[in-house]
Image (cartoon, rainbow, N blue to C red; front, side, top):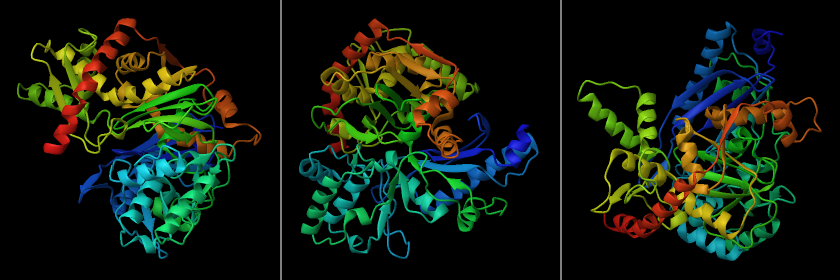
Length: 529
């Protein structure tokens, strides 16, 4: 069967992921090879102190992204896209979308980027004996209860962005277990919300006058490959207003960007890990046993099939780097030079590795938003240097590359040096690794571990979601997700592994001494500037 027939007969799978700055769609064939793509750029808004995306932009962005995918299919294969084997939606995890019985949004979407739930997160962490991050849906809901927000009595259900889009496509309130683990703690033995913690939360909420049990407000939890509904006629028209797309398509359980990242890097089994580095950065390590205690710097989430995962999540990564590269481009433009962005990034990133491994007395704080891992509730991008610093372009760029992973290193030093978590492999993916070898070597130094980057690293979470959609329609239903990835996706996959450079590891450790001391200046800037 040629590719045109494959598309026409729907032997395909589609993954669509709502990232922080881009909505991306990836269509794959039965072998999970990418055959078409589409995307739409967007950006969050800071409205009344809240980072948000208006729902109008969610739908406009989704429809534009799908239309571009559809056009890409037609331009490449002369086939109109009317049916698909399976579809899955993914999005940046966490956040809070609360609706009333009529399906009306009660307050603007509160994204993962907000650090406004400190009181609730601290109380829940103490009462549940579980590190409860500020960005989790349950922290947002409990903070609204504590703050006596007027919308709370009207909440009929709340969910994440991926869960909401899936609900509008299928009429089913259901989310994947990995995504659910960013709403409320999951019991990995059952793959469902932790019942003991549900009871404790309900008691806390009842003491504040809330009678509705929280499990009745959250979506049902499903593991990868399980039934999550089908595309309705209304959902098909919402995705493709032209009316070409037919309803009845199988829908995968919606997952978060953490779960799709694990899938896209074949890091869903014990001892594997991955780092996703783009606008934000997070590491995931699948555990063989529970940690010795709860750490406020480490979140406990799950794989798309429910295994326990230690996650270090940082709100900031490449935004400040991108801003500096943009400044250098503007400077070159003054002289009539118009470099391509790929060339500019490549030259600046490679230049960064040519001088001092400890950055020569400089430190970069890339905090556009707050960083709870280091107890910063807001961000002020900041660059500092000592008076006698070796202030060169190479050291400046290296300090910004190190700074992009600084908070990630703080969290992982606990996981690797104190808990001694065994790791067989770590795979990197995301824009930070686009310049060959540079981001990879910086991460290897940060974690003092070998880092693998696959040829498909640039495909990212949308590809991971497409794989999960394909997994829903696999022929052998007894095949586990790990078996499916090993045999159907990554067999013979091209990849490169980089070992940590000893001098760079020592240099990064030395850099972090100054970085940690200068954190006081970052926090002072938040308070006073």
